Image 1 (cartoon, rainbow, N blue to C red):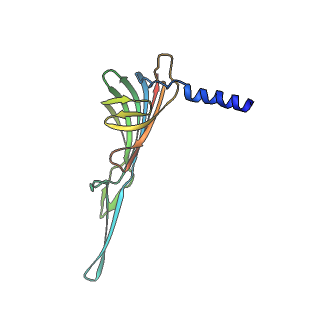
Image 2 (spheres, rainbow, N blue to C red):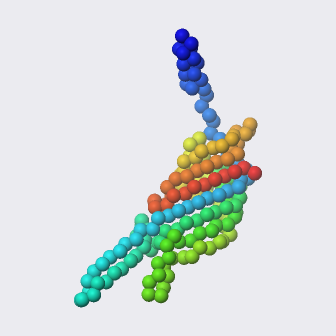
Image 3 (cartoon, rainbow, N blue to C red):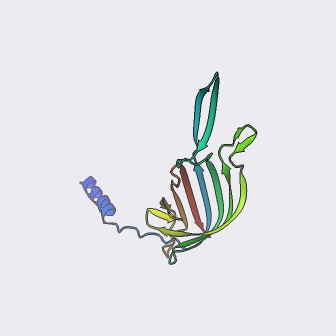
Length: 172
């Protein structure tokens, strides 16, 4: 009997609890982002006369020359949910994953450290955020008494489709 009562009580807790409201993402946050993109490498072999000719090319999923890249971004974000914007200021470090050297030339770019400042469209639901036109899975940490998320983790496949991205927002 105790098992039945306990089971019914637990079931009531899970099925009668009110749905959590969508956390508000608003104000100033420490912002961090990571992006890793895969290169596609095409190796072709052919015969020209009595010589084998080898060719290597690297490209993205749209066919453009693209030796993949990796970027780490850090800074601050000021999020205005009414305007639907996030203003980002900070630095971005990154470059191409591969540097292909052929006949004295290098295809790809070395790692750099550059300041960034931009505005992007921002919105969120209880399970996703849309940032700069891309939608990501979202997971929230503590939500304060005002309903504002103090931490947000988001990730997903970006654009181009050969990229994965991770975003973090920690309220300050």
